[in-house]
Length: 338
Image 1: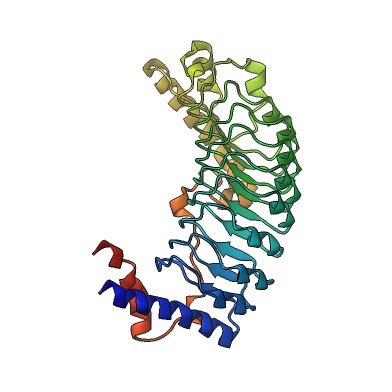
Image 2: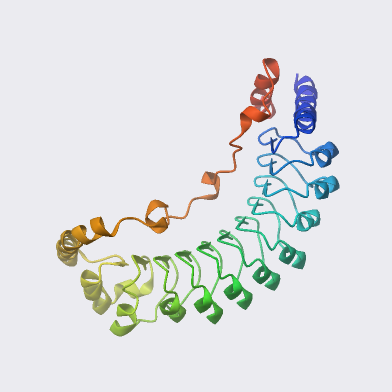
């Protein structure tokens, strides 16, 4: 039975590719088919702008992918890649690339050729370092390297002037480079679960920064009251589960400075709630008049988990086949569990 399903699955994938060639489709969705090899015929789908190969068992991508010179979106997350496919670096029109949840320990310096890249997800791959050439990707707005073995970041990250969202949660970072001060567009910074010992001083220079997650580090250096007041422009400074949360002076300050999130002893909880309510009532009218900007209409206060990232194709009608061919891939996803 499994052999039959593999046959139908392989032919369904080929049929999808051929259909994309004939229709000169802009999008091709081959995700969730449990395929271990992508067909070389993909290289003939030269009109593609979006290609979804995520949630498969790929150990490599076909070399013909370099023919897709118009490609802007490529999803390869949740596969079995053990190295970064160098052919991707020739896709110089790429704007969005997701290689999360593979086994990619290193990124090639050729990554710097992707100068049009706006979104790059490289979560949970075992990555050991970011190449300095990442600084060439000056249009990057979103960079995710969560759950890797990074111990430091290259100073070239400071060249990412368009970066608005950066998450390196669950790595092994001990500090952030001083060049972070140049990230003038950054709104969201997630450094939760690293090995930081102090609140990075460069945060003060980042004028658009609003949400900072430093919880679950080993921060034990108590900042001065003045240093914390300089960070009042932040909407959230999460310091939970750090040694400094045990300092009484900081606990008292956190009651008055409501953008500081940390554990408080029970006798201060009520005072903190009352003060927060007063601030909310006082600012409610101002917030209503101020309207909304892009940081309020987006979920900038939260880092989506890798499994929640949207890598689905929004143009499925373009490539959908009828009747049995529509049902087979859904059925074949579960064949390996029989």
